[in-house]
Amino acid sequence: SLIWSAYPNLDCFGNGLMYAFEPWSGVFSVNTPVWTTAHITQFVEPGWSYLRPGSGELSGGGTFVTLVDGMGNFSLIMETLTGACMYHSGCFHTLEATSVQVYSFELSAGLLQNGALHMWLTNATHQFIRMPDVAITGASFQVRMPVDTMVTVTSPGNRGQSKAGGLQLPPTSETGWTQPMLLPYAEDFNSYPKPVSNFTATYWTDQAGSWEVAGGVFRQVVTERPTAWTCNSPPFTHIGWPEWTSYEVSVRARVPRDVVGSVGLCARFLRYAGFSCAEVPGYCLSVDVHGWNLTVPTATLATGNDHVDPGEWSELYLKVEGRAITAAIDGRTLAVINSSTYDMGQVVLTSGWHVAEFDDVSIRPVSADPPELPYSMFKTLSRREYDWHLRGCDPNPLDLSRLRNDYEGFVGVRINVTEQVKLLALGRWRSDGDKQDHQLVLMGHDQGWIVRLPATTPGDEDGFAYADLIVTLEPGVYDLLTYEFLSGDYWLDQGLRVVEEDWVRVLEGRYGRNTAVLSTGMNATLYGPVNLRVQKPSLFHNALEIVHDSWEATV
Image (cartoon, rainbow, N blue to C red; front, side, top):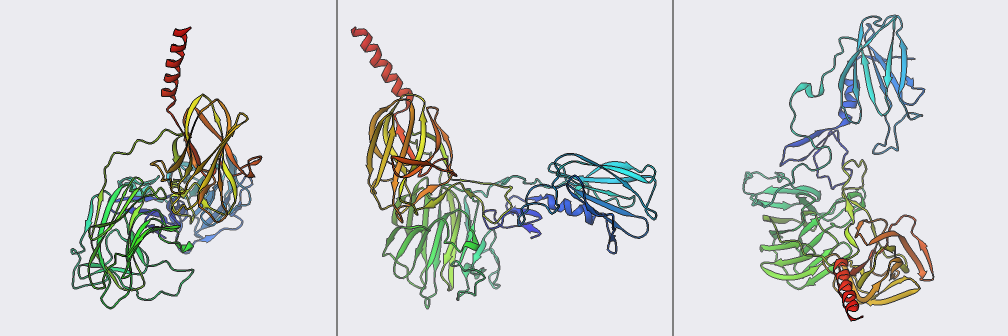
C-alpha cells in the first residue's frame, strides 16, 4: 500500500511506503522506500532510457543502472543494499557487498564530460541527502560506495529535491507508538448525519463483515457469508491502542426482531492474522436468544442461560483488570474468572452473518494498583514482544512461545541455584481451560521431590498455579519438570523472555518420556513454563543468622 493506515497488530504490518496509523496524534512516518524510489524518480523524466552497457552488477557486490535522455544528461543509480524484503530473502544482486568499494566511470561521447556531477545518498541513518559534488576529470569520475547504501550521481540540471523540500514535518514514528489512544473513550454515533448511511466510524477498523454508521447507530449489514478467498471469520470490527491493559468497556447491542443471531463484545484483542482464519484473540462475551458464553480461542471460560430478546437493546460489559476478567449483561454480573492468556489489547464488536446494531460504546481506564506478586525465580516473564522493524505477515506482537499439547512426557527447565533458599512451592503455568491434574518434579543433588498439582488449583497473579513443597534448596543444578499429556492441557513451547532473580539461572529446556533420560531442548530455553516459589532470600538468611546467633549463645 502507499500509506499503511491500519492498526499495526494486523497482517503484514509495514507493507506501506508511509505509516499513518495514529490518527488521534497526527503522527506519520515517511519510510526509507520512499527515498530509495526517489533516487530514480527525482532524476529521470518520461522518455529516458536505460543505457547499456552502463548497467550491471558491481564486482564487490551490488548493482548499478544508468538512464539517459539522449541529449547528454544522465543519471547513475548504484546500490549495495543488504537485508531482507517482505516477500524476498534479500536483495536481487548476485553478490552482497561486505566492504567499501570505489569505482571509476568513463563518460562516452554524447554525455556531459566536464564540470561536476550532483550526488545524493540514502542509508540506514540518512535518507535522500545531498552530498558534495563529484568532479569530472578527463571525462571520468569516481564514486565511493559504502555497504548498505544507495547513491544517485546525476548531471547538472537534474537537481532532485531535499527531504520534503526543507518543509517542517510533523513528528515521525520510527520505532512504534508515539502517543497511545487515550482513555476514556465514548461514542454514541450521533455526530454523523442521520439521514445518510454508509459512514465509516472514526477509528474503527473492520476485519470481517461490513460496518457502517446509520441513523445514530453502528451496524453490521452483511447477511450472508461471502465467497472466501481463503476463509472467513465471523463479522467483527475493532478499535484502540494494542497496548491497553486494564480497562472496562460497555456497549448497547441488539439484533432485529426477525433475526435469530448473536452480538458480542471482546476485550484485549491482541492481534489478528486474517489469513489464518482464526477466532478473535481476546476475551469475548457473546449472547443470543439461548444464552451467553465467555470465551478465548482455546476454551470456553464460562457460560450461562441469560439471553437477549430480538429487537431489544441489551448492555454488554467486560472488565479486564490484571488477571481478573468480569462479564455482565444489563448490570447482572455473569462471571468473574482469572486468566493469564491475554494481558493487553483492543476492543472488538462482533456479530453473526446478519444485521446487528450497536450504540453507546464506552471504554474507561481501570487504575488499580498492581498486586504484589509472590516471590518466584523470575523477575519478569514475557510471552510476547513488539518488533516495529518486522516486514512480514505475522502480525505484532510476536509470540515468543507457542501453545501445544501434542507431546506426552516430562517438560521443563534445568536451573542453577547459586545460593541456599527456602523453597515453598512448585508451579506450572496456568492456561485457560486446564482440566487435568499434573505431576511436578524437582530433581538434583541425588534428591528428588514429586508433588501433585490438582486442576482445581487456581492460578495466582503471576499466571502460575502452585503446589506446596517446603524444603531447603542447597546451591546446585536442578531439573524442574511437569508431566504433560497428549491432547491434554496446553503448555508453552519455545523461548520465553525471562529475567531471573539473582539466586537462580535458567540453563536450558528439558524434556523426556521419563526422568531417567532427559534431552535438552534445541530451540527452547524453557518449557512449560514451570516455576519455584521461595521465601524471599533476605528473609531466609536473616532467619538463619538468628538461629546461628542463638546456637553460639548456648555453647
